[in-house]
Image (cartoon, rainbow, N blue to C red; front, side, top):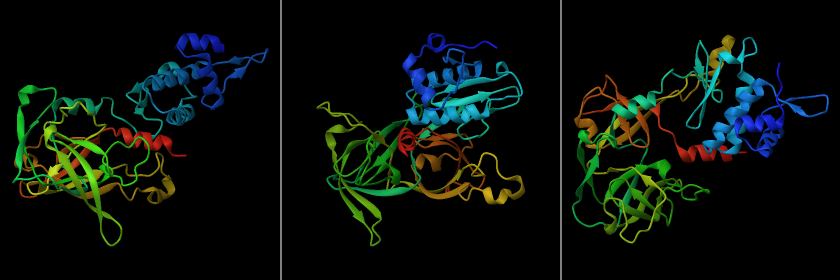
Amino acid sequence: MKAYSTREVAELLGLDIARVRALMRSGVVTPQRDDAGHAAFSFQDLVLLRTAKGLIDAKVPARRITKALQALASQLPTDRPLSAVRVQIDGDRVIVRDSASSWEPESGQTVLDFSIREVLNKTALRRMAVLRPLKVMIENYEGPGEELEAINHPDHPAAGTRRISFGREIFIEQEDFMENPPKKFFRLSPGTEVRLRYAYFITCREVVKDAGGNVIELRCSYDPATKGGNAPDGRKVKATIHWVSATESVAAEVRLYNPLFVKPEPDVANFAADLNPDSLQVLSARFEPAIAADNSPGPVQFERQGYFARDPDSSPAKPVFNRTVVLRDSYAKVAGAEKP
């Protein structure tokens, strides 16, 4: 079987020799040594390094690259040739495909042979829903409120627009606020400014807590000159968050389905011990009225959340939606990569 030198690997894959050696030191690849003591890379090593190149190009954090490739190395087949296996980069994910199945080495989860996100991205109308509401009071907003224009699909102008209510009191996601944010968290925090989707820039001025120290309300100010999401003075914000009106939004139920087991390969003899207690989460959410008004069975994207389908239990008076697949969360990926 042919072996490849470090220089040949670097030239074949377009990687710097220093990067190849760094991946060797991290344990991602462990090539054999030739008689002269030089690294001799196998074809399997090339597969792993080619995958590393794709993740590097996708700007995936170094720690996550190492983790993904270590998982991949342990799962590459030894009972059949690697020519029967395709390793692909889908965004920042590693997907392994063979004649029988497709799976993600990091999670061990089987994936569909097509990207459901890609399909639903083309067909699902956009709506705003807050799954874990946190109240925001915009103290300098005056008047009874107003209606703003929101698009139904960014890639299909023919889908039209809709009107959404905005006023002094709104709800945002609890996870879109942190009182003591870490590095690279650009959403709302005390003293920071963010963009409300389709609306205005707001700045957090005060945090209200209950007797237990839990955040229950934010007091904010808004800049009326930023209507539509742009500042006349050209200043920029680093995050845009979704929201719904506190007075006009509709109470709803959302069911989040997660993996049934906490391990990719549960213990067959005692599988109950590996059941995921959070495989189903039922949330009391708030929807913009357009979601409740349209009782169609078609899929919908809750902006920044994921793709959802209406449950048979749903009605205009009490909407119930089930999550089909999540959207990617850039901060969650960064936070996960920075964990020791």
